[in-house]
Image 1 (spheres, rainbow, N blue to C red):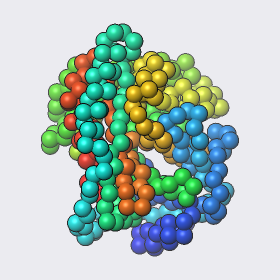
Image 2 (image 1 turned 60 degrees about the horizontal axis):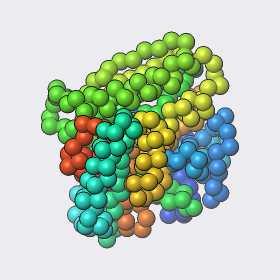
Image 3 (image 1 turned 45 degrees about the vertical axis):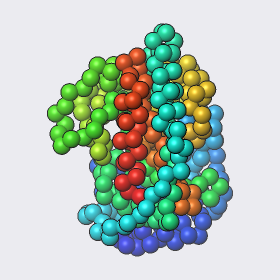
Length: 354
């Protein structure tokens, strides 16, 4: 049901305060904001990719995939014609991350570089968690900040009382399918945005991007009757730039969704190459549970289409604590200190909206 902006967000706040599950999301470069408000507190596990609703899946392929079934939800819609006028908040954020976090992360990166140089892998994506505390975190205010600031990202807030609250503004599409037409992308390589998209990319970032593109193409091309790539080209995501290649085609049949998702996730952009070797390295060395960070989320069989995004640039909120998840792709060309700085830049995207 179409709502005015004020009524829409008042209803979302009421649902949240009532401790009922909901998702609010806006797809990249769109004005429409959609909410699915579940009518019960039940936790629904995805049983089939033929279901309709909003899916929230973890990094671990064997983990719990959650769906808000369309038939169990009230659907609310509003259109944002203008940015929200938000009063500046003087939120004081205190990091509770251990003092040796930088040293530890650099050490893990150095191990990964040596591992790759010994020809055991081509790329490994390593991440970390940064936890911040504040006197108060206003979820609706933070959501509006993300909607204002990250128009070319998939912006969302997801809540279930049995799982928790996640928010994010991810620049990366996993897969979109409509009428047997497929779209996906490879997104890899990062540098700070300094006022222009006309930048020079180093060999490390170019290699990283090529690895991701080649992997996706290799896995989906046999399932397509036609195929096209555009890129790589530079795109802006908040205060950062990335290298992106668009990949599209026509599916050979209409029942390939689950096969495609399983072949793509986790992509080299959030795991590495070879997939199993990189995953084993991550599980052994990262030292924490990624949970739903670097998983995927989005519309499953809604309005005759599926639109799924990789859960990057995200955070988990609990009481007045925010855990921000950030990572980067490591290759034989990586410099550990530079990779640390990249994670700091990525964390700033979420810090900015708190």
